[in-house]
Amino acid sequence: MAVRDSASRPTTRFALATLALATGLLCNTAQAQTQGAETLHAQIETRAKAVEKQLIAWRRDIHQHPELGNYETRTAKLVADQLRKLGMEVKTGVAKTGVVGVLKGGKPGPVVALRADMDALPVKERVDVPFASKAKGQYLGKEVDVMHACGHDTHVAILMATAEVLAGMKDQLPGTVKFIFQPAEESPADFEPNGSNTWGAKQMVSEGVLDNPKVDAIFGLHVSSGIESGKLGWRSGPSMAAADQFWIDVKGRQTHGARPWGGIDPIVVASQIVMGLQTIQSRQVNAMLEPSVITVGTIHGGNRMNIVPEKVEMMGTVRTYDEGMKKDIHARMKRTTEAIATSAGAEASFRVVELYNATINQPALTEKMAPTLQRVAGEGNWMITPKATASEDFSFYQEKVPGLFFNLGVTPKGQDVTKAPSNHSPEFYVDEPALINGVRALSSLTVDYMVMAQR
Image 1 (cartoon, rainbow, N blue to C red):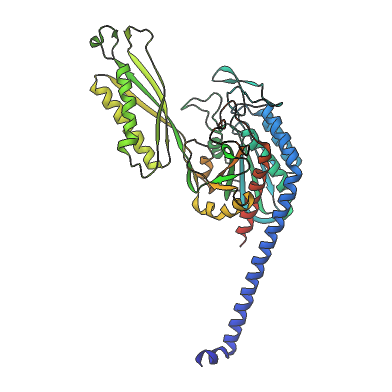
Image 2 (image 1 turned 135 degrees about the horizontal axis):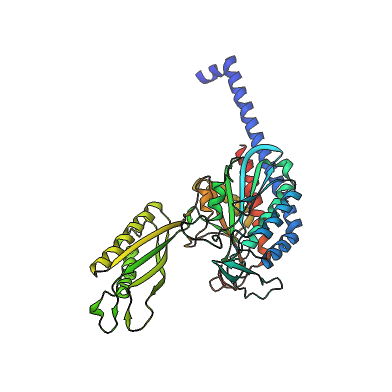
């Protein structure tokens, strides 16, 4: 009875009516936004199909004319000319050869950045296609063959096609898109640790690529030989490893190989250090926290079979996913190296340079955008990928703004992906029909992020 009496009061009736009106407006707004998104999705599908032929033509052209890190002048010009044709504000020469295009939508909203890397590798191509690379380049002072063995040619072509799709519907976009075409993801062709040249993403961030306008979220993709053609894969949190480079110099005392007791053998000491380093992962760090890898990739010492040399030099890589764990491993490596050398009467120095940080997909952003990737991929055509021990400089963007990095499969259907030539192989092959899914995914992530920001 009390409820009925109070509801009959004028003020209560007015409040209930206002609440009903507000609820109706919210429902109508949400319904309009959903319908608007569906309209944009339909446009993406239509425009992506229309640009597919050009997408493949761009990819083949770029593949046939690969360029090493910080020398992507031809590729950069191709990109810049196309973005200008689409009416964008274009800035060139960012981080040496990078290109940034800004597409302003017809409505206010967030700023979404999309990234593609442009550089190729010092690899001689062995894929039998009409557009195979015969290019040469200078790498660390030597002439080398050059190939897009990691698929960056596809990344550039996909983002150029995405720009075509989104530019065609810019008046309906509730926000701004920043297209980032970066150099030197694989490192500059003349890279020296502690030198002035660094990774393209790191340099672009330092030159303000995420500002003016300030980026709210960034998306990027990488083609993968380990996934079937057209499928999309991603994971939340750490997805690709941090990569560090280390150097170990062991100094002994030279002597005749027939009288090793007359000196201190740095080769034996170096061998003990290599084995000692392997106990760090297996016995010293918490294997339940995150995986890690320590690999000694080079070892040099001596020049004659019967001479114990004075010095051995080693170089290798460390891969980790957790920042604290990484620092701890570095400290343990230094301690292990120096202690083993001291025990033999030798001397050893340890030096490490942090190259890439771990690629970490922000969990909140990943959860928010996963339905978009699932919708684009289709039922049974997407997967949650395992952690990869490879590294990516996309991590430098993610340290500044929320980012999501995902994979696009390019190994032909029916082929065993575990036996397909991997990225960086001279036989790395791209199934081109898969590329359109990259365009659909990047375009849809952009639109959906913008629409959701309006709610």
